[in-house]
Image (cartoon, rainbow, N blue to C red):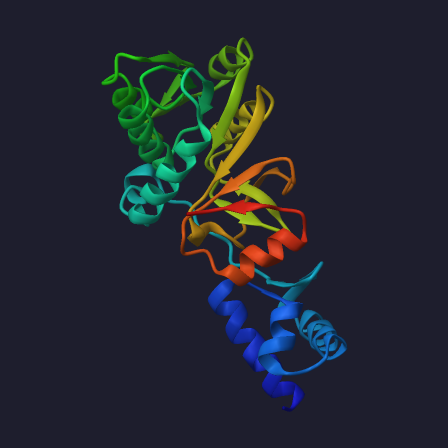
Length: 254
């Protein structure tokens, strides 16, 4: 197989999966590791990919911002699936912090239906409206300035409220995840609240549906840290999951 033919196939896989692993390409294309690495180098010089340990990732598109009403219409089956799966990491009686966003709504529904005793700290008005239906769930609202387009609170009063608490687990819902560019989001005011959630818990869970992987966002929330627990849906390509694992990032999905 000629080099340009191999590189075209690699491009197609990157477009489909967002990333490729060296070992899988060796098997699929029937060439040596050194050949794949040379292809990666050429393609990186052309701006077609970014090399990472164990493979390569797409240069990634910049994910555009859309408000909550629009996001509530997108990838709902994936969000419902990953939220139900994420609820399995929570125990009765836990104290948890819950970020805002469309995925937050699905996780709140899963908590409402599954648990009889929880304490949830949140700035999401949407999550509060769902969780209050379960009398066994105690909700602490971190209020502040109300952001109508996100149905949540933000600002210094919200941040200061979070600083009063310590939770066992925090669930954060970013807009984009990338090995190269880290965990990203868009809304500056909510971004500052998310940063606080990373500081107040024993364990941080990053929840994102598969469409958000290997995407870029304007604001960088944090690096891809191996101590975080990353949860997504069953549509995440196995090759991408494998590549993340080779970079010490464990992805959990149904």
